[in-house]
Length: 462
Image (tube, rainbow, N blue to C red; front, side, top):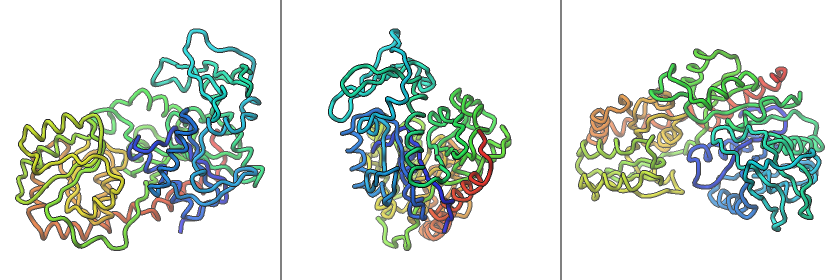
């Protein structure tokens, strides 16, 4: 059992909305639930999405219905929260009690060069006016004034930019936590944008553990490939975080070799391992499960599956996205509509994986490749391109086949080998759960708890 330090835990996410952001949303919710299951008594999810209170309530209800919001009772200040109230939003909190917001105000006025978005509270009264900053990569760093309203609708003043707004809320939340128990506060930051805004948070009782969910380089995705400008800005601040949790050891090692630093750790996203994978499966069923987006290269798998031409097999593709029409056209042009189907999104991925005899992915890059580990956990063999990051780590102990990235002929050959050879397929299926155990929830929580224990025991880095 993972041993977490006695502390207050805040998990920060820019937004958590059902059906958006794919594996990021799933992994963030799962981390909170797994920490609670590991015995953490005070863990809260904080979001910063300026939607309506009704929207946020619907999101929490849907996550709860799906079983993704499983966090026990906890205490913030003098208020008990439980169930769906474990997911707290800045704008909902300000609408319920704007006293902390009014206390953060300084004299000033809105920027007349910018348009503003009016944010009401739950009963429709003006709460905030947010500047529309025309910079998609750096809007959050703008110091454009955020207008704050009194409950009677009068403008009370401003806070300095989104950073000023976000920090005012976080300091209010932390003050409430400390009223209940004066413990260290561990902030698990799941978003680069938020990380940039809190990288100078000098409170000596705060420790920041920054998690990573995706690739940090541009094509061709080699360790020395160019950085996206967003990552360049982030790496300039990386030394300020008390720990940085990379989802695979391979990515962590590439980062350390290129940038140095002693705060980089490997902390995977954990996956539940079923006690007994099913024995009976749908004969000939091959599945994919990912967003229908260009970077997933689903067209590669469609062409490879058709070329493999294994009698009695079919390919079911789960997910939605902008590529749906193009992929359907590809299926129609290949005359493969009776063997390849776009099934749309699923809310029961485990059931899909337990029915399948093979899981295939042909994505261009990954952070961890969580779907691969989930397939292995359900005893489903995997065929995948060998890309950064995740597949090679996940299949190091067996359970599937790696082929060179972009080589559709090799991908077709691997599909043909597994689906055409029952003995090989059974062997890989037996290996799969053991391979997945390296990424189990227990393993993930052990790694995270170790990182946090080290961070709490060390001086703050800011």
